[in-house]
Length: 128
Image (cartoon, rainbow, N blue to C red):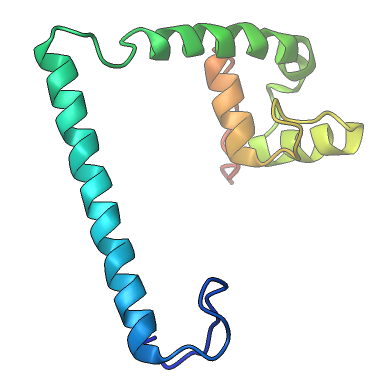
């Protein structure tokens, strides 16, 4: 609104007065603040009751799952360990091997995966 970009609020229709838009924006902002305050109060009350918030072990569990999933790539990556990470990523993409999330490989992903598998990789820049 400050930059004078026209927009339509579906609840108010296309011909709404800018003043009404400001009023609705202010009310929405106030409601967001009230929701945040109620959430903070509820979490503080739960903590005061002794309720455990969050999961302290989730990071360890997810790391173990990632390590287990990475083992699938060991037989694919181990023979390529003497190549630079950039070259490995190109080879994996040419072979149609997707990343754990189903995408294309980048050098940094190869480096992280090799690190997870404790396989050393050459730096992309070769000494002359």
